[in-house]
Image (cartoon, rainbow, N blue to C red; front, side):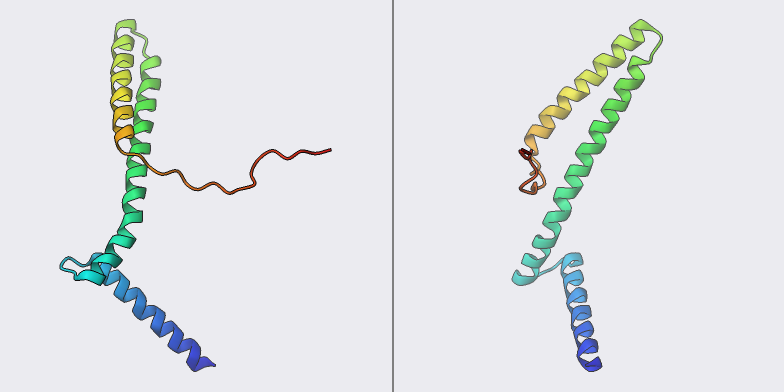
Amino acid sequence: MLLLVLTSLAIFLMLGIIIGACIQGTQLHGAEQKVQDFFTRFRAEEDTRQELYESAYRIVMDLGEALDEEDIIAQCDAVRSAHDRARAFKALAKDQPIPDAPRATGQGLKVVK
């Protein structure tokens, strides 16, 4: 039984090393390239989603600072700048559609009698 567990752990460790080498590799062949594409696809989607979130966060924080500005002219300029950045962000976000996370079914309103 112990030998079976150790063998299984060794196989999983070897598979992990092989997959890691495929992900980090540069000059790959057909099957290796497919493995790399499969695993890096998820990372690229997450990186894009994180970049869009950070950009939107910076725009909102700058808008909040602009609204707190005491000088009316400086406030108008800062709000206009934030508005221009928001419009550019909207155009960029439309060009890079990010699939939404799948929602669990059955999360609706229930009728209680």
